[in-house]
Image (cartoon, rainbow, N blue to C red; front, top):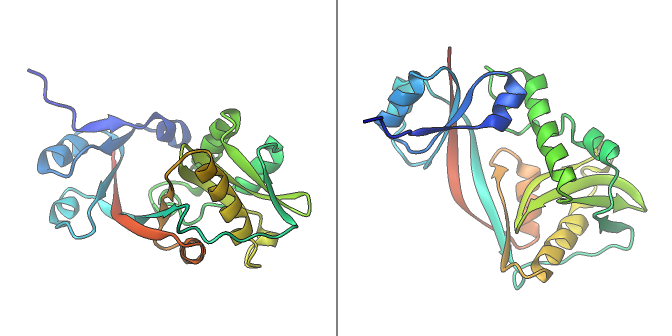
Length: 224
C-alpha cells in the first residue's frame, strides 16, 4: 500500500523558483520525514505556540508569521476623499510596474535560500493571473493609478501602493472603498492575510475597524 501523501506540490512556486516546491499538509514527524526525502523547497504553517523542536531537528527554519485581519460591515470605519477613487478598469502594465518588487515583507523575500528576483517573479506571476481574472481594483488619486488591491471572493490577497503615495494617509480611503464594495456585494466579512512584520498595513487595518486572528508561523526547508 502506498503511503498517504503528507505534502502537496505548489506549481506556482515551482514556476517562479525553478525547483520542485511543496507544502506540508500537517505538522507531524511523518510529514517532516516525507519532506526531507523529497528534493525541493518546502513550507509549512504551524500554530505559534506549537513545539517547534521537530521542525528544527528536520532542518526547517522560520520565515514569517502571518495574521488574519477580518471585518464586518458593522465594524468597518469608512473613510472617504473626493480625490481617492477605485475602479476595476486598470492598465495591466502600470499595475505590474507598481507591484514589481513591492512585497519585501513576503516570506519568500525573507528566505535566504531563495533569490530575490525569483521571489519578485512569484508575485508578478500571481498578479498577472489576478489581472486576467479581473480580480483587481485600481487605486486612483486624482485620476492617476497609485496602487491596486486584488481579491478572491471576500479575501484581499495582494495589494500595493506606488512609493510616491505611501506614508501620506491615503490608503485608508482606498481600502475602505474596496472593503465597502465587497461587503455590499453580499459578503458577510472581508478578510486578508498579512505579515506580522508589516506594521504599516497592520495599523491601516486596525484604523479601519479590523480585528486579527488565526496567527500562523511559516517555516521553510530546502532539500537538495
